[in-house]
Length: 381
Ligand code: NAD
Image (tube, rainbow, N blue to C red; front, side, top):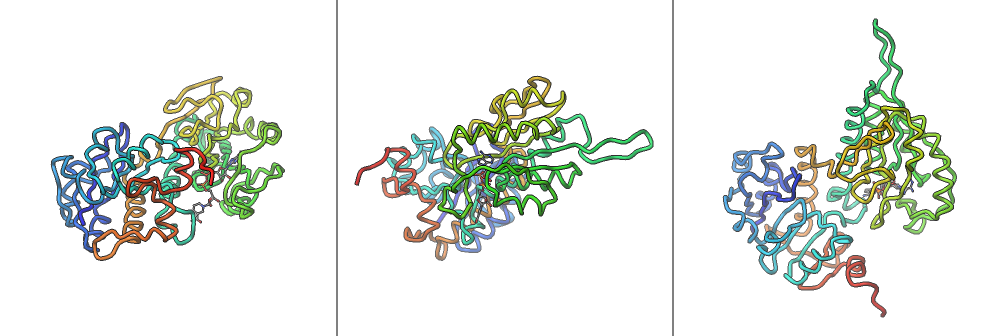
């Protein structure tokens, strides 16, 4: 079967769905790989590198979009979506719980679609988990952005010209992105504190050398007690959380916020009052800007200064580091594709929990229960 890699068209998207080494892996597995000329250019992956690894370079976007299997980063839009042929197999970050119009169009066009964000968070599927691989890049990048905005060193520096005290970084939300933000800030020498509503992450935070901010909030976890995912807090719990967090925010030079609840708007953790309490020149980097932001003053897609504090709401942080984010994402796609393939043919087993978890549309229907309910509303049985 032919697997194609179109050049991404979404403004600001610099990643590419397959990198040359991963294209070679698919070619070895019996696939024919077709790459649109310039697809890897923004990630510094020229056409020659793909050709050396056995891929065919296509000048025309139309040829690429008519392949059997299409590997994308962002969801196809408009003419791109119209150009896919009926029965094609699509992999991408399709955002199906939010982009209902896309899901309906994919079903109408009888496209078999796999959303890379919907890979189950299980040990077996870890190598395919694009949410995690891209969150690692986002967390790393957010810390670098925080240090760049801040007019201070992160580490303590003792020089002949004087001593600089270390900066204090507070990370809110210690999932995959948050843990990477903590690790990066520690490596840069900052004093790091972190808070998460799930007490289960305390050990992980401490193992990275950061202090865990303890706030007692009674909460049942969303997944029946395993403690893996957070639930939305009640108003009373939010009020209590904010009171206790206020002191930690006021003491921080940089606050990096990563808190999220799957399928819901980001919880508001940093109020305007808290921003006002920060020292002039302090920084908030809000990774959750994608889903509404953890800080009340975040403007999605912009860096602003409010009450003397720089608030960075840059979207799509992984795209700012396209070489490595593309490498990790390409491995996620190839591992999923190979998981459901046999001798260069995609033959998904819809009973398989990984396939069933991330397949969104197939043969004209929305096959993922959670997405179907989000798109069509609850169905009474
Ligand atoms: P996420 O992006 O959904 O959320 C980020 C963090 O925000 C989470 O740790 C969450 O607890 C926290 N949060 C939510 N509401 C909050 C609030 N009001 N205040 C403070 N913090 C709040 O999470 P994620 O990074 O995608 O990962 C979620 C969990 O899944 C983690 O435990 C992670 O280790 C686990 N995970 C498991 C696997 C696997 O087993 N294969 C893969 C990836 C992630």
